[in-house]
Image (cartoon, rainbow, N blue to C red; front, side):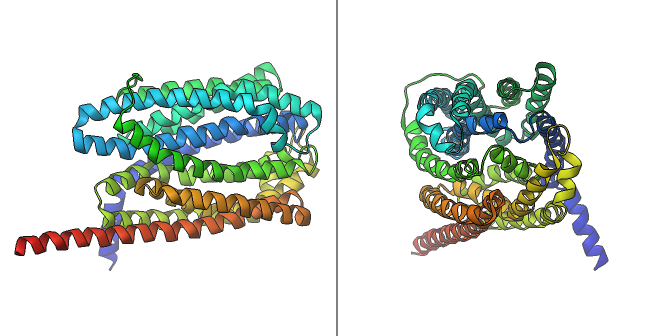
Length: 460
């Protein structure tokens, strides 16, 4: 028994999967530590203030641009490229990739300008509790942060291409650059929301350069090349648009949370944001290494229609996600007040603010295992091209989140919004597990049916 356990442990330690996850995890710790340091500097300079509220609302639309357009295009692109490689060869795959990058940048730019133009109409809906001066500042910051949305979306496309070729180190360490640039600008140029936007934009440029360099060491091309859209682009759009709409609906949950928090008075949006900081760090440290490594495997197995192996890999990563996310959930929830007091409480961040933020963090931490498993399920959904799933889930999440926020905000204040998110993520996790398992089961049945038909023909 002991010998078998020792042999299994030795094989695990020698596995490429574990080595990659350890490297990505260590780099993630470094980057998240730097990002947390940036947040501590921001907290000391801004506290929970109107200026920080305005910045947080202003970057909603650029962040949606990154998540809905950039991230969805990046994740949708890889399965399509694998299909082109299988059907037409490596040269056609690279040509399609370079055209796709070109048209993706064009789409990101047009969407970014459209978001900026719609800002005066949309932003009042996102900040119903803001004063007129705060809303004017939000519109100004939106225009300044629009390039950040385009740059970060493009960065995500190059990152997925690099990760598909095993270049995880560069994509994992690149967020460190934004944290460093932001802190240097904040310390050197003073505390203003414009400086925060400049830090994001310049840091995003540095991240893009590093990811482009990583792709340059793969078989993919780094230079976008224009070309007449063809069947590949049509297929990519057909796959991406419902996923983009679903991602947009899912992203609206964060937007709804911030909008509802603005009704609680000045500084409430900032307090909600601070309460989610350590949760975001934990998700990044635990979830991102799993997602970065798992998604290329899911995509390749789904493209090869190896559904049995896909089920094994998905279950393995799901159990691993649960095992590593429960301990930080317990710590961040149980020791929330000590964590917030030790880290954030200094400068303009008062003891009263720390008490409110600690309660928000305690309730938000409950979502950790559920949100990571749901994100893993979402990557499997992308790989399986289940276009309708995100639409159904996204629409249901927006409606449920709006209702839960409204009810719990009146009952608990801003901490009620945090509790609503945790409840919502539990439902999302269960939904994703059922959907992915059902899709894999159908794929296995189809695969077995095809094998049975082939054997019958050979026997005949």
